[in-house]
Image (cartoon, rainbow, N blue to C red; front, side):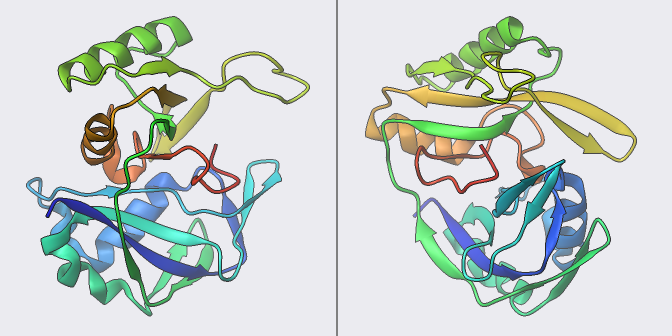
Length: 212
């Protein structure tokens, strides 16, 4: 069996939408084995309701921490259950997780894909296409357009702050995937910082509000 998603319910109030690095730091403090460079895992951003002004509200029964890892590593991640986390000054608590198998879907979306030296939409799409070709994935790709008043019709652009660095990335839609390609992309991800939520793909429509 390959990778699966381990989903932990999250209880808390609100936190910044860009909480990738603080979440990574909090989780790896509780699970030090994740620092092993041989560890194969990806950590998605927390889900919730976007409040505006860079804030995300956590909703009981809906907000989740999603950890994608080999099925064989599930027992090693279970100690997260019931633990308290402090993320960007906010106190959170994780509940008892459940396992979710990866499901093939013809369209996948990632909230943020980070590719080195690809900070403009055109160069980003070219670099993403090259990485997908290396994975033998032929799907059509696009960057979703913004619908806000200020940037309406322009490609959405996201940033990830890692300590003192700001990294530019983009959301990415990949369409017309075969079942095998869809599962391969969910397992492999795309771009960098996968341990912090970069290149984490979910079926379109399954992603929760506040993350795409």
